[in-house]
Image (tube, rainbow, N blue to C red):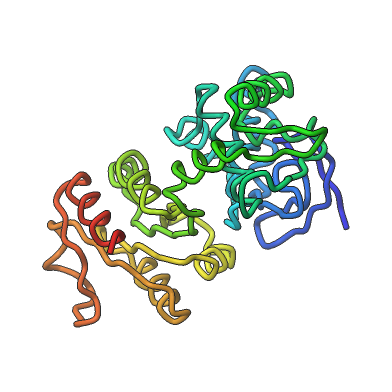
Amino acid sequence: MNKKHCLFCDEIVPIKPEGDYDRYIGCACSPGGFYSLRRDSYEPINSLPHPKKRDMLHLISAYIRELTDCDEKVTLAANDLESIANSPKIPVTIEDKGNRLLQYLYRHSEGPEEPVVIQPLSGSYNLTYSPNLQELVYIIDKLINEQLLIREGMSFKLTGKGWSEAAANAGGKKLKPCVVLISDEGDLRTEWLEILLPKIEQCGYLPRLLTHTKTQSREQYSLELIADSKLMIADLSGQSPEVYFAAGYALGLNIPVIWTVNGSDADNLFVQIQDIRPMVWDTAEELAVLLQQRLSL
């Protein structure tokens, strides 16, 4: 198997070509897993100025690790990096970064004081979206001092207090993968990212936003992502045929689908059948309330 340098964690790892993408297997971005990078994105990313790489690439590594650790498939292209690095979901404060470590330990244990081995620690500072090992060690010490964490060598345990805090931040339960399908409209995507996805996460789901563009490769990875999900939210605003197709695929796998549509498109849908009864919304704030009510049932 060929090997290649991972641009995000600096490891040399096996790769597997798949269509227009290369699958990077088992690097520090996804220990025991993989992520896919569009092949023609490698050189543009590698050619970024050094200050840009220093500020951004460790965030992408952390993003990949967090999502793949939650059993999500990650497929990237060069034009995805800016939006990921600037996403409001990326932790900035030490407190928020510490919470990411608590969430990781929560996902990998069944209760307080159950040990989770993190090894090597030197390659795991992406667990807290940190730029280096020194910051990770500082965060660990801070959590220990706050009596949220116990460390014994490379073994880490959540205290009862740490478990309760992690559970509260996860809505009292481990987050379930959820796919959100929308058409390719810039304003719509921004509204979903900033207003709606955080509300969906509060209801116990880990949402992954998928949009369909004229240039996006319709690779098998998106179908695999759907198949691994516990819920789909399909927004019919913009009349994207791909949204209908992907939602139909989910229904065929007995994955629940919640249909939504902006009021401006509600009377002009391509498909008018009784089984599709979308929530009609006029503002993102209104839809956030409707979705929370539905997901809380």
